[in-house]
Amino acid sequence: MRMRFLIAVLGFGLSSVACIRTDSLYPLVLAEDSRLDESLVGTWVEVRQGKRNDDGEQYFVVEAASEHEYRITFISGGDEEKPIVLMARRQILGGKEYVDVHVDEEQITLLKDPALVFSRSFHAFARIQRNEDGLLVQVLDGQVLGELVEVGESAEWNGLRLTRPGEHDILLISGTSALQKFFASRHADKVLMPGMLVRKK
Image: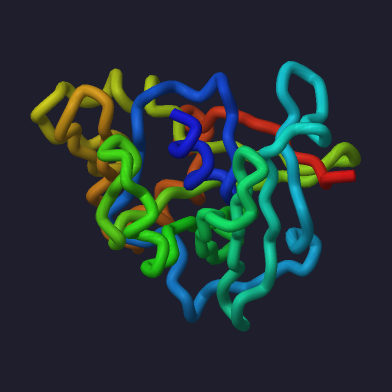
């Protein structure tokens, strides 16, 4: 459950996220369309039940890895020797800011738990909104999407194609163009759930 939010939201966990993994077969943001924003660079922690988690052992560091991608290093349990490394791209769609997160290929072998391992081609998305406190980060709500498709079936909702290979897994199968059209529309508001991130003190 924690890894699902970790992958979807720049490498961090949120205890309240639903236990239905939602990934995409295709990217939302192509490398050539990604534009970095330096304000996302830094060290971040989550807010749980209105309280900052500065004293916790989980945090992540966002760096510019290239002209088009961020590198996100997730530290958990104080173990800085074995961090999880994610990559992310950023794009504005329909006036909203999105990030497309995927696992660094070198990190695939570190994800030993079968519940956490997924194809290196899978992507996860989040919408970001800035406020005076930090970042409001909205991720795909697996519970809501789960109501749209039965286990073992495929469905389409407002142009978004998805399939449900298992009870706890949903896979978006729309291509990049269709994904961008959907997330630029008002329909995306209905399938996103919020979390809060702040800079580590």
